[in-house]
Amino acid sequence: MLQNMKYVLIVATALLAVGCEEDFLDTKPTDAISASDALATEANMELILAGMHRGMYSQSQTIMPGGSAIASTQRANEHYWVPMGDNLAGGLIHSANANNLGWRSEAQWNSHTQETSLTVRILWYHRYNIIANANSIINRVEEGDLADTPVLRNILGQAYAYRAYAYMSLVQHYAKGYLIGSPSSDPGVPLLYATEAPFTSAARSTVQEVYDQIASDLESAIDNFKEGAPRPTGSAYDKANLNIDVAYGLRARMALATGNWQLAAESAALAREGYEIMDESAWKAGFNSTLLPGVIWGSNVITTETTYFRSYFYLASNTFNGSQVRNNPKIADRRLIDAIPDTDFRKDMFLVDAPNSNLSAANGQGGWENNTNPLYETEEEFEAEIDRLASKWGWTSRHNTHPYMHVKLRQAVPGGIEPDDIIYMRAEEMLLIEAEALTMMGDIDAAQEVLQELGESRDSAYDVSEYDSQESLMEHIKFQRGVELWGEGFLFQDKIRWDEGIDHSADGGSGASQVLYQDAYIVEKPSVNPDWIFKIPQAEIDANPNLSPADQNP
Image (cartoon, rainbow, N blue to C red; front, side, top):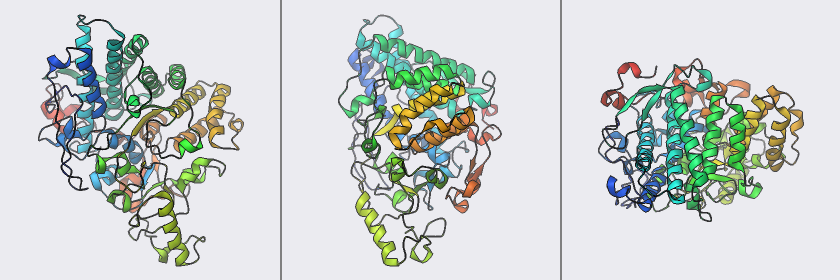
């Protein structure tokens, strides 16, 4: 299995940039370590963890070296995978035709539905790379000859949590959703326990068996974290380390995906304990630092590494100075934004009345000649607003603007090319999981109490009492997730859990162009449409003796 994984153990690598042009970036790993040395001491195992942290956002060739397609520079892992969830689900909407890194092809559902695409290959191998590294630590510690110390327990807790995270990602992309399928018989993904090549595994386990492994790993992670050294605090890098809060958060996600509402509510409450809900200033700060209040887990991206034109902010932010952004401002679904009350400060981060300055806009309404916004009665007013927005938000004169474009995701230095941090988990997500789980259990009063905490921190006129039935409260939770977590990658899995399709035409339209989105303009719900499941990489089927063409997803 995983024939393309040339190196299992990845220690913290320093990347030497030899070029920083947008269309050509070259990187070189400068550090590696043998398996025996890497697993000899706690300090060396911590280097493996540091390499895993780095591998979360490094370009794929730095963790999967070699000449194959999985070593492509076109995916910088979580920089790509995090916003992909909103891109695929139609939340992060393209306003113009641009296909850098295949980002438009993702939105059109022309990538994850192809077994030879970079996306299905690199996501598969990246997750199994995490698993192989975690296995190395777990298997070594299970040999039982190392001193049982709090540091070792912390290392082991992180390894188990990482493995659970990777398996959850795999089963949620390459298998049918738990709540809309038959998990005890639906094919999941292979379970891998090996430490060294050839990485033999079983055939595809069932979805249930994979989730059972995830649950077991998370319990092991929590047990070890309870006895382990605490996560350091004070720096952005500290949040890259997994701790017991991250393990509780992953368990909350797992339980929500499987309909274990009680466990989801309990785990989410534990995960967010001790974390502050972001206030208005923090929420509007750009979501570019793991030091923001409420951040439980995220990657502290080292800016000297050449992820610039492969970064989360390049793909999703409207202030990044790259062609994907300048030519193609990302907009939010106007149906969602119009539903946000004016008393809710989150609405300020979506520029409803931004002029459409893009002559190449997919809706054909770019430029002053096509202006229909009564706020701009003259071309001078139209152009003046374009200049004002550039001055206020920090983008350049080459950036286009578009109605409903967002400024939620912004670099620390807008108008530049720095990649900045990636946030994976925060307290507000946990609060929303808790509220959803309580609602699904029928505990409306408790769910309302939880939601009131979030709502009143965002909306000066918020009153949750009007949502007094399970149905109305659940719809409100979907709305709150849509606004609060917009652009943070959760929408694809949300739609699978809720069994909801994509319809950019309904209820006045989302603002997406049917010409641009093609067959992805309307997508049937996951329970009837197998295209919500990623194809297994053809290269894996060809190389893995435990898989055959019959194992390919339909």
